[in-house]
Image (tube, rainbow, N blue to C red; front, side, top):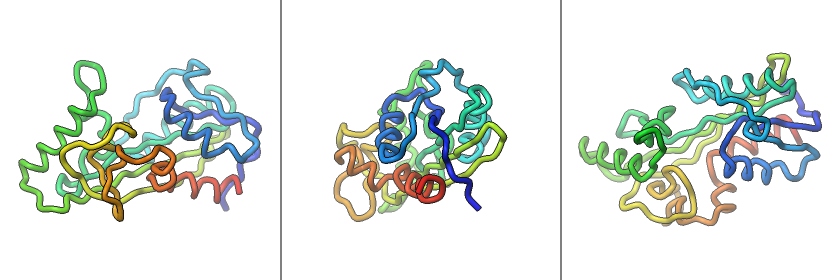
Length: 203
């Protein structure tokens, strides 16, 4: 049986302000104070696993142990079918350039890889998100979300982040990068995972 969340505070194991705001919005109907790992000056642990759930568990349990509070972490990325699921858990790594993240570089690299293998259209892909809610006693609950679509070119839109400007969801003729932020949150992989989290632990 899924453990119910009934604590007054939740640590979100992220240093990303945009992600923190999204999560606060998703939990605004519940009586919980959301604080980030960055606000608490927690270090970012090394993500040494090769799965989304493995890396999310590292972050969630590290924050829960450091604070004595329940902690929520996510790991997410894009899987491109014609690239055998790459970049997958290495989505952010594909954006690394001289110690900084450059997602224009990452999207260009992805499209060039698709061109190199002469991938047929539609160049199907999905965004995946795994959420781990961990308690200080070591217990955790895991929720997976996804959104299916295809990679398109050229890049379109400046509303999202990461690979959003080259990802067109099934049923839409615009990319996530062209979509209103809150509409994107409603249909996104993170939104899907959060609906499952809320149904399992909050509702």
